[in-house]
Length: 188
Image (cartoon, rainbow, N blue to C red):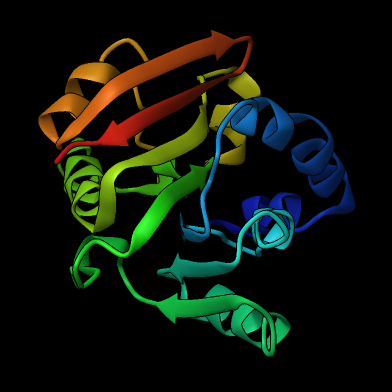
């Protein structure tokens, strides 16, 4: 993420928006179970909220600085922080009841890398486990915030086919101005 993006995603304004509007909308009616995988938590604003909804949580962050900061903040909690590329997650007997990613898919550098991420998430979820997330739709403001930053937009209309190809079923996508949310279930 560029500096502006890091600043925005760690701000109190972003925290208020995420915890007051975005997460309630994204998680409406979703049972996360007891063991959650969060992919790309960035500064961890979503992690702080999500960890109160589950017994155990693993947060996977590729950025070493963000992972180290989150690891320090989550010490002695129910959250394990891993610094790694989520497409390289080991597949130990499908331990997760759910997986979540919030406003991070557009930071994955290519559609092929996004598809690899979807496939790996499907591989570590228990059969029937839920994958939930949100991402942004293009706008001038969104594009300006991503100058000199990775921005690989996800087409919400094409997302169901991509998630199905990765091993998910029951894919649902809903759009509102500026963003979309999705849920999908891991197949057998």
